[in-house]
Length: 572
Image 1 (cartoon, rainbow, N blue to C red):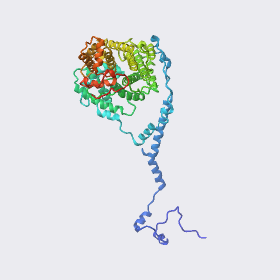
Image 2 (spheres, helix red, strand yellow):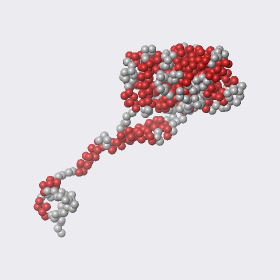
Image 3 (cartoon, rainbow, N blue to C red):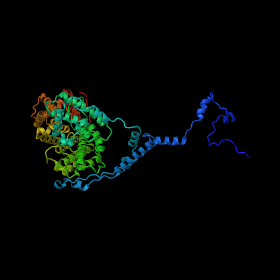
Image 4 (cartoon, helix red, strand yellow):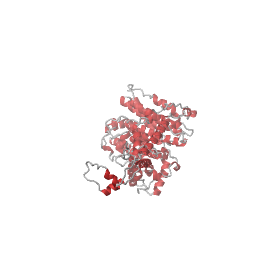
């Protein structure tokens, strides 16, 4: 049997014309045109080693930086990094309870018991947090996005924008450190970063702004231009995705505590700004599980800033009758400030104030109805606080805390709430007069330099005491003395002290116009109540501060029911 002469399919077919002539022509379907003889010869002469090319293509694809396999490798590496991070965050915090329990107790007998900080659950630590996980993957696949931090640097600072000269700005920084730096744990210029001007425009500009009233040759126009720049920087900073730098947190704390100018349309809302800053700080400072490699000095500085932030928020929560973002867990974080060998009595006073206002806020929300008219109520929570922290009351100069004023102020608030529940209680009215007088007497004993460096809420305490004294004893000698003191310490007519002094002066003027001698307390009180004098409290005081004609305001001290928000807000 003859073997077939057909070529093997693995062998290349012959290419001579004689073989082609012996093969039948195959008809090509659906081909409207046929290649010419030359083209066919060229095509049949081509050789391609497809397997080799395929392997080379696969190798090239894997070598590309954006290849599929490279992307998968990067994603797997990212997931592995996230897993390690989550494992670290899931570890329970290390808290030295023995040191905390003994902090300041040898000399003072303090027995502070902190609520144990619960280990973060898997949901809180990120195992089931889809939002940050997918954001991370999206950034790895599609590249990073423009951040608000870039906008902050693009806006610039007071020097780069031409508002202040370099020499004046650096002098203002020196003044700021000397006068106000203690409120944000800056005790010398060494506590500020070397690249403050270039890398931290918000803190640099805010420090210059707040130091400007203490320097006579800085004009009002310059202060207002600086204020507008700081507002822009603040808006971009608070919208920045966490984590913020410590310097940004310090700047936000400053702007929550101080109002640099009151000629703007409306000052920054301290309650809102401090609440946002607290949420940023809890992530920036990693208070849940601080890194073991962090040195004690850095941790203590962060905790001082954290305590000041929480205190500011809970103060303005009480002062505005708004909810506080400072939970019990955040208060427990505050207690860590006592865990260090280098903790000072001022640190203890700072934490004590956080506890005081937190308790007062709860008491104002849960205050029981007072039915007895002849008895002054006693608040056990405040008495217990006083027994535990009496060593921080009046034992050291007023530097970066004001626990004495705060204790009397909280009692005054509770007395006013009790009086609202029972307006016929003469005993409570007398207690209000005594407590308000006590606050004003302590205020008048302060040095001018100390009072001028106090944050805004301190002046709210003073003016609130003066308003209550005006309500029940408008002819009291402390009222005129407080008005004169506030006017004397104010560096200019835009300072909060000057405007609060103007409020007291307006109250006294209206009472005098009623035709009653201010030396007669009883008659002066009647005249004061009949004249429907303008008054205000807590956050609403800003409406009087920014109004030229105080007599046109629809406020009456008869309507004061601090801290609840009644129908007190009216446009002038």
